[in-house]
Structure formats: structure tokens, C-alpha cells
Image (cartoon, rainbow, N blue to C red):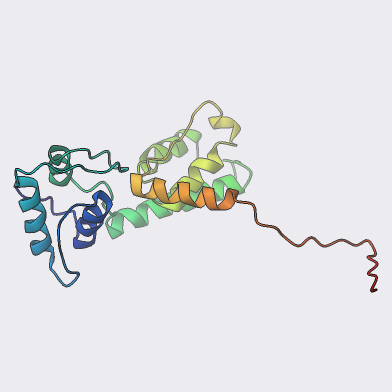
Amino acid sequence: MIIHKSFSKNDLIEIINLLNLPIRFNHSDNKKTIQSKLIDFIDDEKQFDIIDNYHNINSKESLKHFILKTNPKKTLTIKEKNDVMKIAKFIINYSKSGYDIDNHPYYSNHQQIKDDMDYIKQFGDVPSVRRCCRLLKDDPQFACVEFKPLVSPQVQKMLDEKQIIKRKFFPSLRWSEDPVLVYFD
């Protein structure tokens, strides 16, 4: 069994820690050492309960299938990311200009925008892509089309945690122009 090459050393450490696996490693261990320890754990006949996680890994067999496939957190190549960012900037510019296609230098019709959005929405881990999807919701041309970005479980968990933090109530100081009288006894 060979772990897919798209998993980095840090990805493997994150999986071990996330699933609370009884694998001892040192951060000075290299990727091959951690891979061999993980493979030995999977091949071992002992049963082990895996805790709930956002990868939906619930057994050694599902862990094996997970690490044999491409890493879902796989980062884009530099060229791909530059292309995605360029398209995202064009769409953000289109949105900020009041959804006016006549004055846009890059797009000549709405089908081009739709095609670009269909391409970049698969890279939902990039914040600009999520912003494009959110901005195009207000475009009357795309009122019945929903562009839902594909977000990896790790990024989705991070976004959910940010939402929880934003929802918590923190008392704030409010400024008022009305005169305030303070009495001392």
C-alpha cells in the first residue's frame, strides 16, 4: 500500500491527530517514517475506535481508502491559482461596476461570466472565489442560477468556527451626541 503523494508530512500528522490514532511520531521524523507508521497501524489486526471527524473516516478501511486517493486539500499549482485569481478579479470588477456588461473590458456577454464561474467555483477554498459566488447572487442576470463554491471539509470547519466567533455577543461602547451628566457624591 502506498499513500498518495499529494499528502504532505503535515497532512499526515493532521490526520493522525484528528483521528486520535495511537501512533507515536516526532516532528523531526520525515514523511517516509510517518507514512510507514501509518501503514503499519492500518495493517495491524488490532481493532481501534476512530472518533467522529469531518472527513467521515470511521474505520481503518475508510482511512485506507482516504489516504490512497488524492488529498482533498490539494493546493493549486501556481499557474492554476493565478488563472483562478485573474478570473475572480474580473468577476469582482464586473460586480462592483453595477453588473454592467457593456462597460466591462473583459466580458462581452453573460455566457462568458457563467462559464468562468462554472470553472472557478470548484476552487472554493480560495477566498476570492467564495466572494465572487456571493457577489453574483445579487446580479439580476443570474437570479435563478446559484454558484455554490466547493469547499474542502477543513476550510468549511474553519469558516464555521469563524461564524461562531462572530455571533458571540461582546459588549461594546456606544457613542452618543446627547449631553451626559455625571454626579459625584
